[in-house]
Amino acid sequence: MSDFNTFDIFPVTLYQTNIPKNDVWEHRVIHNDWQRMGSDDCSITVSRNLFEYEEHNTKDELNTLKNLILNHVHKFAYEHYQISRETKFKISSSWGVKLEPGEFVSRYHYHSNSFLSAVYYFNRIENCGGIQFERNPHLNPVVIPGFEFDYETENNYNAGVVNFEPNTGDLIIFPSHLHHKVLPNLSKRDRYSLACNIQPVGTIGPRDLAERHIHFGK
Image (cartoon, rainbow, N blue to C red; front, side, top):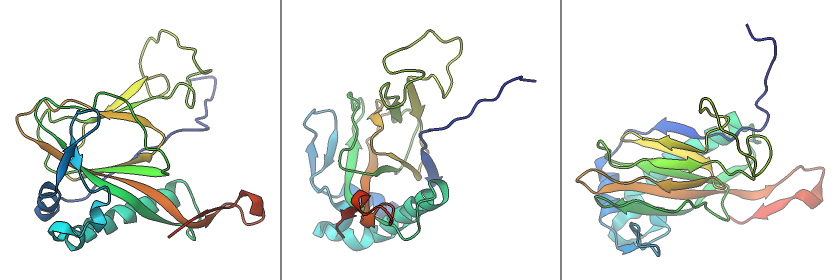
């Protein structure tokens, strides 16, 4: 029995759930206009607002998925972070991601001007590429920024990276500041997912400290 206690006082939390896949959602994402990313790692939809995209009748078809994702965003915010239920959230941008066999997103990146980000995974097969998160040594150092040790065993407290291999229909929501990249698609099929950014709506901040209020448009 241990003779000491430890407390995780400022953890970073990821939210994972499963939304049973509807083939129509994937069909509507696939049948969009695509372009190569600037880094030429993979392809993304031309539209960065896929849930509101009028072409190909995607808006109505994907509205159900949009609402399901938002339901989980609000559950994450209210039940985990204990954010006031008066605060609402919206999806500010959404786009499809396509990885052909052998492709991956090589650079870690984060989503600026965003509160939370989410990824929904369509048909998943073995070795089609997961997502990797990198610990930011300045935001979440093991002890102090820029100071690393040799570790006897890797765990959630000292790991430099954490990999997730989602299943079909998995939804992962994470703070937008987390550095992440997409692992190689080693399968022989194209891999599709839908990513989105989430923002609060309206005025946020303690009501008794007006100078700390931040207002976000609808």
